[in-house]
Length: 205
Image (cartoon, rainbow, N blue to C red; front, side):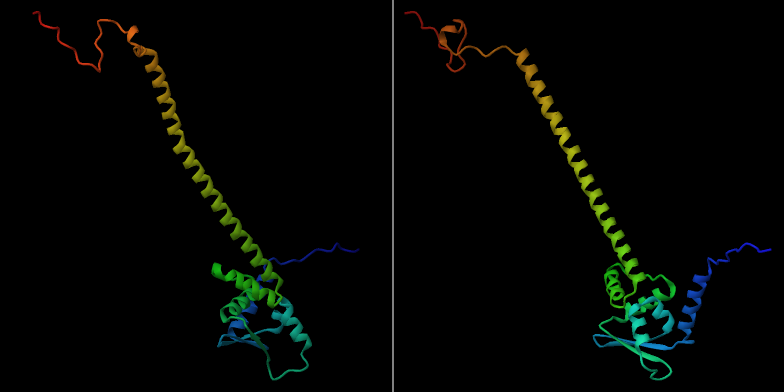
C-alpha cells in the first residue's frame, strides 16, 4: 500500500543558511575568493565565498565560471571605481538580504548593483527610491493643500467685511435725506447758504 507524499519545508532554513554563511565570512572560514576594491587611492580587500557571490551576482558568476585556473588558495578579483563602503554594504546585503545605508547612498547602491548584476539589490534599491519619491510627493501635496486652506481662510473675512460695508452704506442711504438741491431757486428763502456768511441788516438812517 502506497502512502501519500508529504512536504517537509522549513521556513527558517534559508535565513539560517544565510546567517551561517555570514558568520563564516566574518571569521574568514572556508573563504575561497579575495575581492580587492580601489577607488581614488582608497583600497581594501574582502574575503568571501565564490558560491555566495556567484549565486547573487551574475558578474561574479561569469568571472568564476570563466577562470582557467586557481592562482593560489584563493581567487583574486580586482574591482576599480567601486567605493569601499559601497562594496562592504553590497557584501552585507548578499549575505544577509538586508543592509542599512544613508538615503544619499541609495543611488550609489543601485549603481553598484547594476555594475555587479545583482538583481535582488537592484530591485530593492528601485523599490526604496520609489517609496522615497512617493513620500516626497505626498509631503508636497500636503504642503500645497495647507497653503490653499490658509489662503482661503484669509480671503473669506475680507469678503465678509466688504459685504458688511456695502450693507451699512445702503442702510445709511435709506435713512439719510437727500442732499439739498443745488439751484438757488429751489432753496428755501430763510435758509442761509453755508458758504456765505450771514450779513447784518442795514441800520436805519
